[in-house]
Image (cartoon, rainbow, N blue to C red; front, side):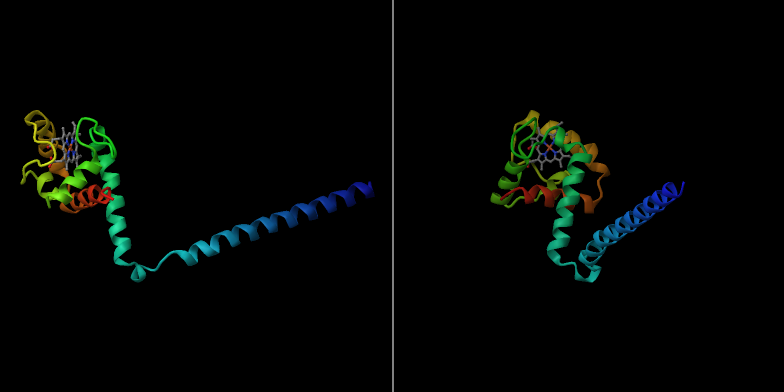
Length: 144
Ligand code: HEC
């Protein structure tokens, strides 16, 4: 009986010390992460730009643009990279086009233009100016 009690005591001790170790490990993991998080005032202009691109990329999927536009290849609409390249070359304004205030410069085939125009008059009508800027920033970011 005594032996069993001692064994039990030893087990309890081992279990307790294991538990403490685990807690210590968790603490160690959490601390550096908290230190690395940048303070709001330290955020640079580059970070803000990257945020905008990230937001635009999310919107590009959320607003179903990806159904017709892949980054590298033509699906129904031109590849995002090709759009970015041509807008850079021709100094075009993506936001203006998405608002319906500029003609297509990438693919001017009337049937193709009509397909895209349906999106400008549909989905893109509900997109805020800020979101529009983000989508344009994302498209431009693919031109490398
Ligand atoms: C149903 C398919 C379809 C969807 C969905 C679609 N597009 Fe398009 N898009 C096209 C086609 C087709 C063209 C080629 C015609 C043209 O260039 O206007 C095009 C062209 C474009 C162009 C280049 C315009 C130019 O100057 O030629 C941009 C920019 C663009 N789309 C952005 C978007 C964005 C942003 C979305 C999501 C809100 C989107 N598209 C959703 C089919 C689509």
